[in-house]
Image (tube, rainbow, N blue to C red; front, side, top):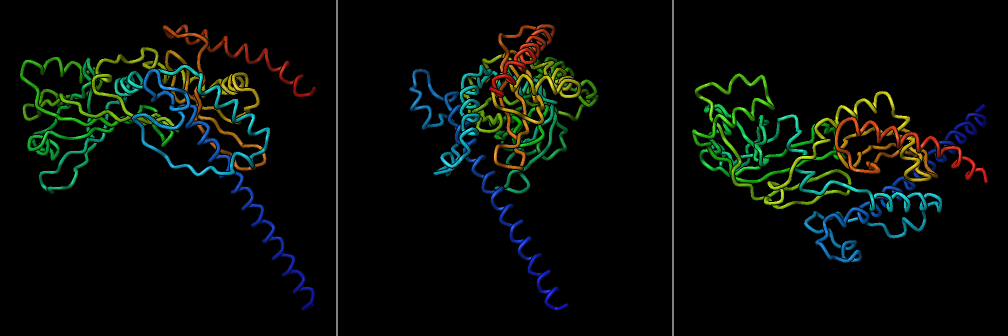
Length: 357
């Protein structure tokens, strides 16, 4: 009995060791995939920051106006499954050539169609040397400058009256995590003049129709009149800055205003169509889930879930799925998505036959 018990214990130990080795192999494979994907996508999107006339090589080695991410990828790409490398190369090429809104338009659009709330950081009057953070309501004016109405008793009102310098961080309406967009505006927020208050009130009520406090006598109107810095994070491997002049001269993308409703409908009722469109656009890229996060006049951003080859751990990443032409209105969006879906479905038999051959 003792020998049997000892043998059983040894079998359990060996099984546990094998399971542990398998988990380590999966983890190593996943890390290699993520590292290679980070490198490929970062290089494929970096040209968005390059000055006009910059060479492709120069753009691939420097992120203009952008924070840097140190990525150690030595050996990772070489050891990846060859078929996986082909898929990643096809993805990188597709993303590099996919039409996108310019950064100024992206930033201006995010601020315009935001839910109307942001995090304001002021220089604290009551705790000198420390930032004071508040969640505040706002509305952009015609130039994208945030408008606010604050109670005279609020701490951020007192902070701004003592020091108008502050920053406002605005997340996209669909924000759920680090893969989604956000903007940080730095500048000086000052009191509005009396003759500007009615226009500010109309703009604020269009964003916050239930804001009954706009008529309270002890509330004050403010605006970020002097914007000195605009920083933007659009998601994975997409971050940088635009000048205040570029931001204020840009116009919001008109399709993005109703893009969220289209994305919601597609995600709820037609995700299989989105998956088919991705497979058609990037041959070999098979995803198990495709959630559209935003729609604009040039295309869609889609958060994909996929299990890489030689791995059993799913990964998530965001890709750009462009439209074949620029969209002008809501009806045109529907027509284009139907066209793209039909093209994807028609291509499926040919792709299956090629795979069999």
